[in-house]
Figure 1: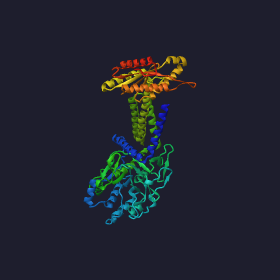
Figure 2: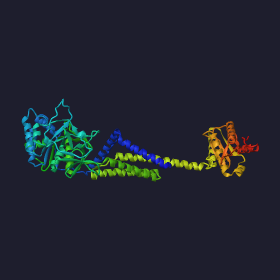
Figure 3: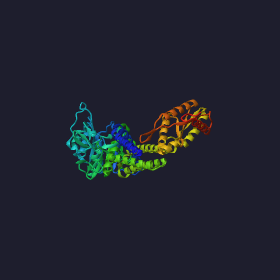
Figure 4: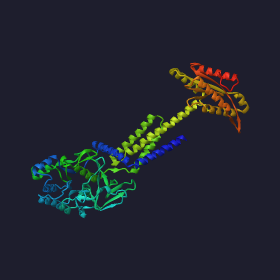
Length: 593
């Protein structure tokens, strides 16, 4: 019965912990930070193992530190004159690339170089595979009036998911790029990013909302063009796993509740082939020979120079250029390689399953070491399984919540188990040291305690006393009333003794109708008065025999005190026994002297 009660309490507390854990925003935020770090660790292990291969058809033309110095030395200012980009694009188009993308924002007209701006605008008019970037923000209208963007930049989105609301990806303002580019092309995508609370970029928006319309991320725009997919986009929720997904034909990209996709990383900074912009400019000028293959490539322009401040922190690197983030994004779309996040309901199921298995192991294995080793082996198997889920299925399986639930079960199960064991031990000890009839300590326990008291009093030079007593004419009582009545009297005398001594005193059944009391730290006079009090309480009491019958009994007692009556337990018992005999010889119902 006790075990059932304890298991019920444990199950109740365990459920309370689950509810509190998933219901507390602060606790969830803390756990999410740790979970994110476990994801980063898994990503790093996979990247360093060399398993993940990036797409060699993605190139990055970088405004690196050398190019930035070259631009200042040869053009005298940054940003670079836009006709230079126009000449570079014209050259690249002769090499037959798939697409050319600028992770740069061409905002405002350069007042001193109107012709340069026109040259760049003409590039966007001439080629349908050139893309550029823009950015949404939430600047107040007192700074900048909200512009109306051309209809062709938005995409049609059918949102069938009841969980993705894009609230965190909804913006109220934007800084438009050159009007000539806006009017010339629809190949404009957004480059807003979604950093986690710890500042690490793990997710990127797929779509952003502005003035009640949806606009694609630059990477999504380029990916759709590469895959020749329609820009009619659906957001659905799969019945099987309950997650929301962005559908691109037969492809599905996992979306969190805010509309972000989780990037799958291919390596640390420098994974993709980098071509310094200054070298490309010199190739266009004819100063150096072209040694690069641009055919059938996706070419990304972006800044990597530290002074230009487009540096991100990602799971696989503390310093990661923003343009390489965009390249990774496009790579994920082309390879259909985004990370899929496990559903929260499955996380709870895994946690409960681990907890149940933990309880089964701990309750079923006697050895604490073996139970602990088995439990932690189970957790290790789960962690390894989560790693392989990411490795082979791009699935982010939560580790922290299930392990937290399992460890909670581990600790509480051990507490319950050893509380039960403690209770069982106490019960066994009680059975071994207690008389079943009177519920007093038995003769064996009496002898152990006598020896302990003698040893202790010798060490600390203190004293203790003991009382031996038996019920007067008990044999005759049994013959008259029967053994059941005699047992009833024994139990009631035992109760009377326990009620009239201190909590520290030890009441025992010595044998038959004889009982004994050990009185620690008690001198002869106090022991004698205690014996007299007990004698009177017994003689004054009416003892019930059943069937509404009552009777009176008396007892005779003998007292001895260490060290006056002996320095060994046998001598003390002998002395008390003699005085008990004297009490009987002198008429019973008294304390012998």
